[in-house]
Image (tube, rainbow, N blue to C red; front, top):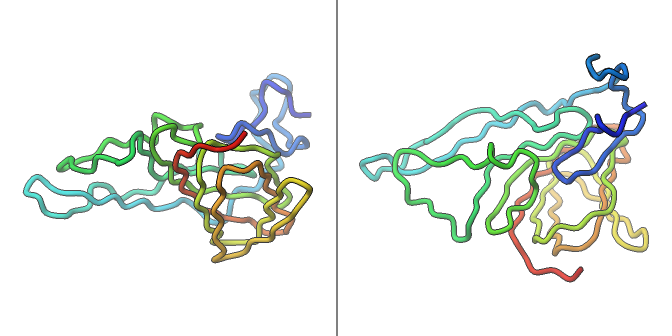
Length: 188
């Protein structure tokens, strides 16, 4: 049984898979019955200017997911303002680590990946943002008010204008989606 104090939470603060076995009641046992995403880590390459004003690679590394179990979020880039100040030379401030569980940036943008295991879902939710998403692997179901279902597959793009929605991976394979969220005024 999944204890409320050990519920796995994605950045959107939704619990998932209530039958997930986390081990004993003392929470020290390893996670069991969990399959990790087959897509692996994501390589992030960040460019900028060197101290001479020439374009260069500032960072090239693989990032790990926040929760890499049946739903995993990998934050790829975070800004805290629009427009983003990209004038720094020779380095950049990586804000991802300052927001490990956040989804939307109140004054900036957030670019991230989501991997959903087979049979996983998010309950209905809404963010004060416009979400630009693309499905790269697998098939995902977007659920809207009135139980309206939209089936999305590889190459499909979603622009969510801040509406209440839910997600469900009703298939037998993992899904990978990429999103960029930017702040928006929305109707509640």
